[in-house]
Amino acid sequence: QLQLQESGPGLVKPSETLSLTCTVSGGSISSSSYYWGWIRQPPGKGLEWIGSIYYSGSTYYNPSLKSRVTISVDTSKNQFSLKLSSVTAADTAVYYCARHFRAAKVSFFDYWGQGTLVTVSS
Amino acid sequence: EIVLTQSPATLSLSPGERATLSCRASQSVSSYLAWYQQKPGQAPRLLIYDASNRATGIPARFSGSGSGTDFTLTISSLEPEDFAVYYCQQRSNWQTFGQGTRLEIK
Image 1: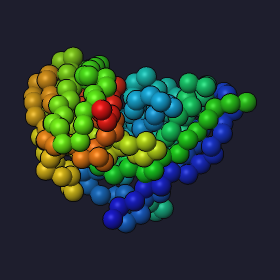
Image 2 (image 1 turned 45 degrees about the vertical axis):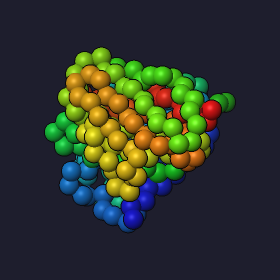
Image 3 (image 1 turned 30 degrees about the horizontal axis):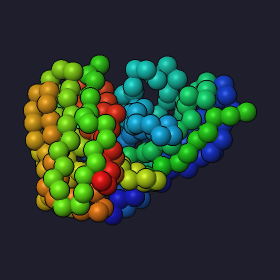
Image 4 (image 1 turned 90 degrees about the vertical axis):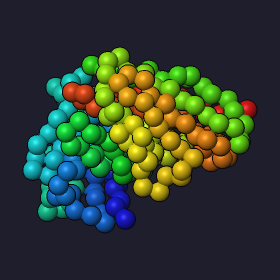
């Protein structure tokens, strides 16, 4: 059974960089047809896709966040990571990592981590 | 950007009743739409992909339909565990989600 687990600081100061890692177990991050994505959810609000990465390192990002986001992959550790720079209180959210099936125009997230709350506050 | 609008915002029904949730896209997404269920404190769970295909392990009481701009998620007979928030999601240039429909017990 594929499992994903987010890890990283739960508190980040304004203007600093948020850094999270997702560890994949029970399967290989190098599987074809699958990207690996980050999605966030502010408290009490809806879901926002941040970006996704293929095991080769190919990335695509939400245009509204693109200038601040970097997603990277480490296939040797079966992990992928998120960095979000210059954070503000508006970036406070539960951050989820997920397996992202993406082929042609088909796209969905079929396995999710449990999520980790990141609070931006001084 | 394609905007997904879900209706109603809140749906109040009783166990055993039929639930019909709507998702409308601001322009055609063909059949490339997914549905998710989210319970409090949990990650979303994939229910339906490609508008009408049930994901692995999803009960047959969940069904999806539609194409183009109008989509429906139907739960044929509500079980107590079905009361949750439901989101639709599409991919055009990038992924977007609807704002959600809260299905609550009447």
